[in-house]
Length: 271
Image (tube, rainbow, N blue to C red):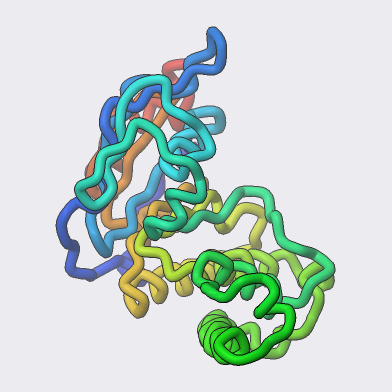
């Protein structure tokens, strides 16, 4: 697989800020298998930071370490100046990090609106009884949350499907709902694990546009895993490259594209 030339049609032009997420010397073992080996990189505010690599490179394992699904064997993760050797997934979400997954985990029998509303869970202050009765502050709170969700539905251009059960939607639209549920958490950092997997060209173009708009209009920092190198080179500010759990490249798209180690890994010359 060759690493293609980038185009300028979607090339980002955003102002990048200070480091918000700093990954230091992360290693991850499963018994005798080393999934990640001494990985370090940082993510700056308002950038789109891509993680790429061949299958089995450790990309999803890296995201799982960041959002608390896995506990690293070694190393630390610093988020906005606070350093952790481990956080659980709820702590990560409460700090402002949201995640989508490779395999959709939506509530297929629930509507688009209700699926995205589920992303507001951490924002709800009323207790369960008040929510069930929908009285007083609980009713006002629900109305405010629904207004926020309706804004996301409009943003993702899925207004016509807001009451449709998600399981009845085409795959590309289900991916938008998954993105919408993550956005409902109002994340500072959004982790996207192969958001365009299984999509056709038109669906990928739409999703690329939405990712850029999320980054620009919401100011959300994005960490992106994606196999389509054309997309990665078009929309990313910086790219880190993994291969067999090791970091073999890190830099701007044009630097990574010219990196001999990266070229060999994708062309299979080393293996």
